[in-house]
Structure formats: C-alpha cells, structure tokens
Length: 275
Length: 128
Image 1 (cartoon, one colour):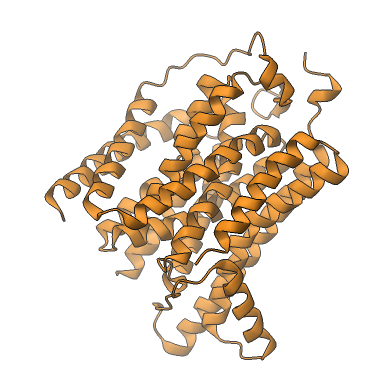
Image 2 (cartoon, chains in turn purple, yellow; image 1 turned 120 degrees about the vertical axis):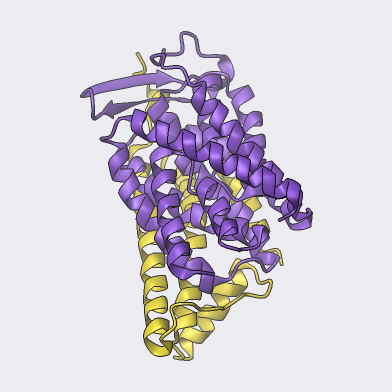
C-alpha cells in the first residue's frame, strides 16, 4: 500500500463524508480497493472510520441542538439489527458481488442526488398517533436565516422498518448509508433537511459500531492500518463539518455527482471483470 | 406550534452526548497519533502491520489494560488503546442515553429503546 496515497484518499473521504452527510465510506472503500486493498478489509476499515467521522461531526451538531435525539434513538433500534446482518453477509460473501453491489449503491446514490428537487421543506400537517406517541418533534435555530424552526415527524411506523434496510447496506458495505437514512427521514418522516442530515450522523456511529463488532470478531481489522486511515478521515471530516454550516450545497452537490458516477461505474466493471 | 411539554427535547442530554462523542474521538485520535508517531520515530517506517486475530472489544480492552498495568508501554499498545476508545465511544453514548432516559427523564419508552440497542451491542461486541 502506498502510504501518501492512502492518506490522501482518506482525507478526501472524510471531507466529502461530512459535507454530504453520507459518511466517508462511500469514497473510502472504492479508493482503498483502487490502491490495492482487499475489498473486505477495506469495508472493515471503512466501518471503523465511519464511527470516528460520524461521532466527530455528531458531537458538534448535538451540542448545536440541531440533531433530534429521540428520532435518532428510535431509528437506531432498526439500523443496528440491519448492520449486524449485513456485516455477517459480507464476511461470508464472495468478493465480486460485493464490488457490483457497492457500485450499484453508488449509482443509486447518484440517482437520488440527481433527482433531488429543490422544494422548500413543508412542515408535517398532521402527525399520526404513533409518531405522536414516540414524541417525535422538536425545534432548532437556523444559523443562516436566524429563525427558530419547529417541526413534527410523521409515519415513524414506516420510517423505522425502512431503516432496517439502511442498516443492512451500511453493515454490508462499510458505509454510513447516510443518503438512504436522510432520504427516509426527509421523504417518509417529513423532517427538515438539516435535522435529518444531522440526526443521520448520530445514528451512523452506532450502526457502524454494530458492523465493526462483526468485522473485529472475524479478524478483519488491523489497527496498524486502521489508525492512519481513521486519523486522515477524521482530519477531512473536521474541515468538512465547519464548511457545511456556511457553504451552499450546490457546489458540493455537483462535485459529488461526478464522483459518484465515476466510482460507481468503476466498481461495477471491476466486479464483472473480477479484478 | 410545538410547545407542548411532551415535545420538549432533552436539553441536558445534548451536552452530555456531545461531550462523550467529542472526548471519545479526541482521546482515540490522540492515542493513535502518539502510537503512530512513536512507531515512525523508532523504526523509521510510517507503516505498521499489527493485525488482531479475532478478538472482541472487551478482550481487547482487558488485554490493553493488563499491558498498561504491567508498564510495558509501546506504540502498538497505544494504537490498540486508541481503537478500543473509539469503539467504546458510541457504546458509552448509548449507555449514557439509556441511564439519562431512565434516571433523569423517567421516560420509559426511550429507556426501552436505548436498552434494546445497549443489549444488542453488548452481545455483538462479546462475539468472537
């Protein structure tokens, strides 16, 4: 492994992961495999790095009171079950389908990001009984507009079970699967985008820990290699978190679209060719 | 619109969780950085191969603490400690939330949810 290249890929992964709310894994795993690392080891290391990225970013968001802790703690009940199953499957699976699956998830993320409409967030008009029972509501102070935004979440009975799938993908591929988590919270549960992005960060840490427990037991984690990767990812995430609050999402989005497409196609081709 | 007492967010917990996550990640990063720097300075090679053979988190923590107690500090131990602290960070966060919901908030619903996450994680982290 080329150490400077590994560190550069890791820093970039952390930066993009924090700014997009998708977690660093989506860039880290393809990057590490391109540098010659076995995909299962790359997934395992990425899972560990995702804990650092997500916890680092979440600590700032939680103290800024944007994250909805109850939404997070309800949804992580589902994501950790999915993550344990997903990591178990990866340990047993052949490598080529993992490449193809990873590439497909990258392209699916591309589609969701590309098709993203720029509608303003609309508050949930009527909260269902179950979401009300779960006390899924809150408010946060928006730094950009200097407004306090109050919101209620809906359809938790659907959002919860859907999070099983998000957790499964996270555990399988060593990614945060933040895009999917954000999508579920935005579209199904009607949360404001900032709340879903930051709450997703909180959930990702615990979900990644569940995946890591499986990879650790299977002997896929080498601390000597994990440490420099994790530190670099963390450095990238540290910078990215500070940019997210101030920067327009447009520039980040365009850059991310190109990268998702390239990496997605490349991973699928490698899965098909068996490289 | 959302001013009912049932919707009030647990504000004290924001700070507790925020600081647990921040201190866990910083401590873990500091340990890893120290371990890697020491290794680099001692061996002249930034790369380090130190695979762990199928241990669980609790065994890793116990082995690290035994080494610390015996006073044999070395780069690999610092890196392993850094990894252990990192993995313990979300685990401690879940534990703290569970205790907070049970003792401070007396919110049985969320005590139940966080207990489920705590028990499942404790189980999976004990696997090997």
